[in-house]
Image (tube, rainbow, N blue to C red):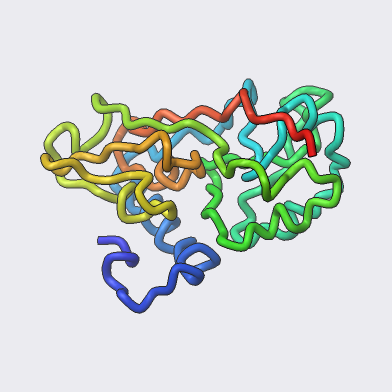
Length: 204
Protein backbone atom coordinates (compact mmCIF):
# COMPACT_ATOMS: atom_id res chain seq x y z
CA UNK A 1 0.00 0.00 0.00
CA UNK A 2 1.36 3.42 -0.88
CA UNK A 3 2.48 5.77 1.84
CA UNK A 4 -0.16 8.30 0.86
CA UNK A 5 -2.81 5.87 2.01
CA UNK A 6 -0.90 4.90 5.17
CA UNK A 7 -0.08 8.32 6.55
CA UNK A 8 -3.10 10.60 7.04
CA UNK A 9 -0.85 13.33 8.45
CA UNK A 10 0.97 13.74 5.15
CA UNK A 11 0.19 17.27 3.93
CA UNK A 12 -0.43 18.07 0.26
CA UNK A 13 2.65 20.33 0.21
CA UNK A 14 4.86 17.55 1.63
CA UNK A 15 3.35 15.14 -0.85
CA UNK A 16 4.03 17.33 -3.87
CA UNK A 17 7.37 18.77 -2.75
CA UNK A 18 9.21 15.78 -1.33
CA UNK A 19 7.51 12.98 0.53
CA UNK A 20 6.12 11.42 -2.63
CA UNK A 21 9.52 10.95 -4.29
CA UNK A 22 10.70 7.99 -2.21
CA UNK A 23 7.43 6.02 -2.44
CA UNK A 24 7.57 6.44 -6.22
CA UNK A 25 11.13 5.12 -6.32
CA UNK A 26 10.23 2.29 -3.93
CA UNK A 27 7.27 1.27 -6.08
CA UNK A 28 9.41 1.23 -9.20
CA UNK A 29 12.09 -0.80 -7.40
CA UNK A 30 9.53 -3.35 -6.24
CA UNK A 31 8.40 -3.85 -9.81
CA UNK A 32 11.94 -4.33 -11.05
CA UNK A 33 12.79 -6.69 -8.17
CA UNK A 34 9.84 -8.87 -9.11
CA UNK A 35 11.30 -9.33 -12.56
CA UNK A 36 9.01 -6.82 -14.21
CA UNK A 37 10.00 -4.25 -16.78
CA UNK A 38 8.99 -0.90 -15.28
CA UNK A 39 9.44 0.95 -18.56
CA UNK A 40 11.84 1.37 -21.44
CA UNK A 41 14.95 3.22 -20.40
CA UNK A 42 15.39 5.08 -23.67
CA UNK A 43 13.08 8.05 -23.98
CA UNK A 44 11.34 8.63 -27.28
CA UNK A 45 12.59 11.90 -28.73
CA UNK A 46 9.93 12.26 -31.42
CA UNK A 47 8.05 14.47 -28.95
CA UNK A 48 9.52 16.05 -25.83
CA UNK A 49 7.49 16.46 -22.67
CA UNK A 50 8.03 20.05 -21.65
CA UNK A 51 7.59 21.27 -18.05
CA UNK A 52 4.15 22.49 -16.92
CA UNK A 53 2.87 25.74 -18.40
CA UNK A 54 4.99 25.49 -21.56
CA UNK A 55 4.08 27.62 -24.57
CA UNK A 56 3.64 26.20 -28.08
CA UNK A 57 6.68 24.25 -29.26
CA UNK A 58 7.72 26.68 -32.00
CA UNK A 59 7.50 29.61 -29.59
CA UNK A 60 9.29 27.54 -26.94
CA UNK A 61 12.24 26.79 -29.22
CA UNK A 62 12.45 30.40 -30.42
CA UNK A 63 12.43 31.95 -26.94
CA UNK A 64 14.01 29.42 -24.56
CA UNK A 65 17.54 30.60 -23.71
CA UNK A 66 18.75 27.19 -22.46
CA UNK A 67 19.69 28.89 -19.20
CA UNK A 68 18.86 25.85 -17.08
CA UNK A 69 17.15 27.81 -14.30
CA UNK A 70 14.05 25.61 -14.44
CA UNK A 71 16.27 22.53 -14.19
CA UNK A 72 17.98 23.90 -11.09
CA UNK A 73 14.68 24.95 -9.53
CA UNK A 74 12.94 21.57 -9.96
CA UNK A 75 12.71 19.87 -6.51
CA UNK A 76 12.62 16.23 -7.72
CA UNK A 77 15.11 16.94 -10.54
CA UNK A 78 12.51 15.87 -13.08
CA UNK A 79 13.56 18.47 -15.66
CA UNK A 80 16.57 17.49 -17.76
CA UNK A 81 18.59 18.79 -20.70
CA UNK A 82 17.42 17.37 -24.02
CA UNK A 83 20.30 15.29 -25.48
CA UNK A 84 21.85 15.78 -28.92
CA UNK A 85 19.69 12.91 -30.20
CA UNK A 86 16.68 15.24 -29.85
CA UNK A 87 17.93 17.23 -32.83
CA UNK A 88 19.94 20.40 -33.26
CA UNK A 89 17.06 22.78 -32.50
CA UNK A 90 15.88 20.93 -29.40
CA UNK A 91 19.15 19.77 -27.87
CA UNK A 92 19.89 21.57 -24.63
CA UNK A 93 16.28 22.57 -24.02
CA UNK A 94 14.47 21.46 -20.86
CA UNK A 95 12.27 18.39 -20.95
CA UNK A 96 10.91 15.71 -18.65
CA UNK A 97 11.52 11.98 -19.03
CA UNK A 98 8.88 10.42 -16.75
CA UNK A 99 10.54 7.01 -16.94
CA UNK A 100 13.58 8.35 -15.09
CA UNK A 101 11.82 10.94 -12.92
CA UNK A 102 8.29 12.26 -13.42
CA UNK A 103 6.99 15.70 -12.59
CA UNK A 104 5.20 15.67 -9.21
CA UNK A 105 3.10 18.79 -9.84
CA UNK A 106 4.57 21.12 -7.20
CA UNK A 107 1.87 23.46 -5.99
CA UNK A 108 4.10 26.54 -6.21
CA UNK A 109 5.56 25.59 -9.65
CA UNK A 110 9.17 26.69 -9.00
CA UNK A 111 10.11 25.88 -12.60
CA UNK A 112 7.64 28.49 -13.88
CA UNK A 113 8.83 31.07 -11.35
CA UNK A 114 12.45 30.51 -12.39
CA UNK A 115 11.78 30.88 -16.13
CA UNK A 116 12.89 34.41 -17.07
CA UNK A 117 12.34 33.99 -20.85
CA UNK A 118 8.69 33.24 -20.09
CA UNK A 119 8.36 30.00 -22.06
CA UNK A 120 6.82 28.48 -18.93
CA UNK A 121 3.73 30.50 -18.08
CA UNK A 122 1.59 30.45 -14.96
CA UNK A 123 -1.34 31.55 -17.12
CA UNK A 124 -1.18 28.45 -19.35
CA UNK A 125 -2.52 24.95 -18.59
CA UNK A 126 -0.26 22.61 -16.62
CA UNK A 127 -1.03 19.72 -18.97
CA UNK A 128 2.14 18.22 -20.44
CA UNK A 129 1.04 14.93 -21.99
CA UNK A 130 -1.88 12.62 -22.60
CA UNK A 131 -2.11 9.35 -20.68
CA UNK A 132 -4.47 6.41 -20.82
CA UNK A 133 -4.57 2.92 -19.37
CA UNK A 134 -3.69 0.01 -21.64
CA UNK A 135 -6.37 -2.41 -20.47
CA UNK A 136 -4.63 -5.40 -22.03
CA UNK A 137 -1.46 -4.74 -20.02
CA UNK A 138 -2.91 -3.37 -16.76
CA UNK A 139 -2.79 -5.87 -13.88
CA UNK A 140 -6.06 -4.64 -12.39
CA UNK A 141 -7.84 -4.87 -15.74
CA UNK A 142 -6.53 -8.45 -15.98
CA UNK A 143 -8.04 -9.37 -12.63
CA UNK A 144 -5.02 -8.88 -10.34
CA UNK A 145 -5.13 -6.48 -7.38
CA UNK A 146 -3.15 -3.32 -8.13
CA UNK A 147 -3.77 0.38 -7.53
CA UNK A 148 -0.29 1.90 -7.46
CA UNK A 149 -1.09 4.46 -10.15
CA UNK A 150 -4.15 5.64 -8.19
CA UNK A 151 -2.36 5.82 -4.84
CA UNK A 152 0.68 7.67 -6.18
CA UNK A 153 -1.02 10.13 -8.55
CA UNK A 154 -0.40 13.72 -7.34
CA UNK A 155 -3.42 15.19 -9.15
CA UNK A 156 -6.78 14.85 -7.44
CA UNK A 157 -9.32 13.16 -9.67
CA UNK A 158 -6.88 12.28 -12.44
CA UNK A 159 -6.95 8.52 -11.82
CA UNK A 160 -9.71 6.65 -10.03
CA UNK A 161 -10.87 3.08 -9.54
CA UNK A 162 -14.13 2.02 -11.12
CA UNK A 163 -16.70 -0.22 -9.47
CA UNK A 164 -14.73 -3.28 -10.59
CA UNK A 165 -11.53 -1.93 -8.94
CA UNK A 166 -9.86 -1.02 -12.23
CA UNK A 167 -8.04 2.29 -12.83
CA UNK A 168 -9.36 4.86 -15.27
CA UNK A 169 -7.74 8.17 -16.24
CA UNK A 170 -9.70 11.40 -16.61
CA UNK A 171 -8.38 13.24 -19.65
CA UNK A 172 -9.75 16.50 -18.23
CA UNK A 173 -7.98 16.22 -14.86
CA UNK A 174 -4.80 14.41 -15.90
CA UNK A 175 -1.76 16.62 -16.52
CA UNK A 176 0.38 13.88 -18.01
CA UNK A 177 2.96 14.30 -15.24
CA UNK A 178 4.11 10.70 -15.69
CA UNK A 179 4.04 9.44 -12.11
CA UNK A 180 1.78 6.57 -13.17
CA UNK A 181 4.24 5.67 -15.93
CA UNK A 182 7.09 5.26 -13.47
CA UNK A 183 5.25 3.30 -10.77
CA UNK A 184 3.34 0.88 -13.02
CA UNK A 185 4.56 -2.65 -12.11
CA UNK A 186 2.95 -4.50 -15.03
CA UNK A 187 5.24 -6.71 -17.16
CA UNK A 188 4.47 -4.36 -20.06
CA UNK A 189 3.94 -0.80 -18.84
CA UNK A 190 0.19 -0.26 -18.78
CA UNK A 191 0.23 3.51 -19.24
CA UNK A 192 0.21 4.85 -22.77
CA UNK A 193 1.82 8.26 -22.41
CA UNK A 194 2.39 10.82 -25.16
CA UNK A 195 3.75 14.34 -24.82
CA UNK A 196 1.49 17.11 -26.11
CA UNK A 197 2.16 18.42 -29.59
CA UNK A 198 -0.54 21.11 -29.50
CA UNK A 199 0.34 23.39 -26.59
CA UNK A 200 -1.18 26.91 -26.73
CA UNK A 201 0.61 29.89 -28.24
CA UNK A 202 1.21 32.66 -25.70
CA UNK A 203 -0.08 36.05 -26.82
CA UNK A 204 0.40 38.03 -23.63
